[in-house]
Image 1 (cartoon, rainbow over the protein chains, first blue to last red):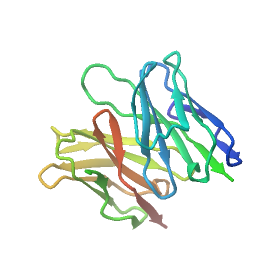
Image 2: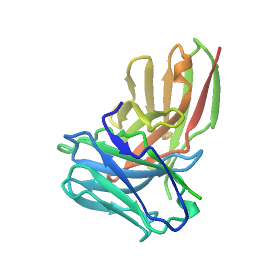
Image 3: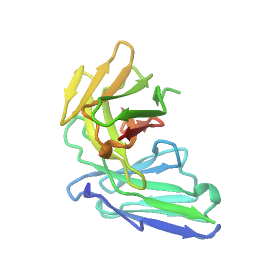
Image 4: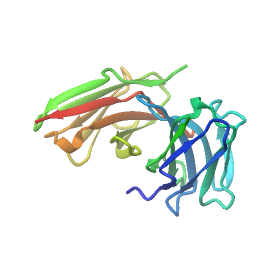
Length: 116
Length: 110
C-alpha cells in the first residue's frame, strides 16, 4: 500500500453516462497527478495539480474530462458522456515537491473503467 | 517527439538468475529517471530512481545503471524470485511530468 487511495476500484458504465473517480493522495504531498493506462501500454499523463491549482493538462484531456482538487487534498476526475474509447485504468499519483530536487511519484491502485 | 522506450517487450528468466531490463531514452535533457514495477490489476510501484549526475545506484537486490552517452538505462535484479514477475516501466521526468515507456514483462520460470 503506497498510501494513495482511489475509489472506486472498478466501474462499469453505459456509453453516454457520466462517471466520477476520487483520489486521496498521501496527506503531506502537495502535487497530484492523473494518468490513464490502456492494456499493454505505459501510463499516459492527463493532468496535475500543485496544491489546489491545476497547472497542466494533456491534449488527451478532452473537454468531456474535468478534474478538481478543491482544497488541495483529495481530487476528483469526471468524465462526461462516456465513450467506449474511455475504457482504461485511471491512475492517480502524488509527490512531495520541496525545493528543486526531483522526487518519486507514488501511485494508487487505479480505477478500472469499462464503458459498455 | 522524444519519448522513452524499451528494447524488449518480454523477458523470461530462471528463478535465482539475475535479470536485466533495458530502456532507451531520447531526451538528452532528462535529469531524473525512475523504475516502476506493476503487477496485474495494480498501480505502478516505485522501485528505484537515479539522477543524471549518477551512473549507478543500488537498492535491495536491484541496481540501476545510467549511460548518458548512449542514453540507456537498465534495471538489474539479483537472484530473481517468483514475486518479481511483473511489468517493469522506466519513466523519465519531462518538465513536471513523468513519461513512461511501454514496459517489459518479466516472467520468472521455476
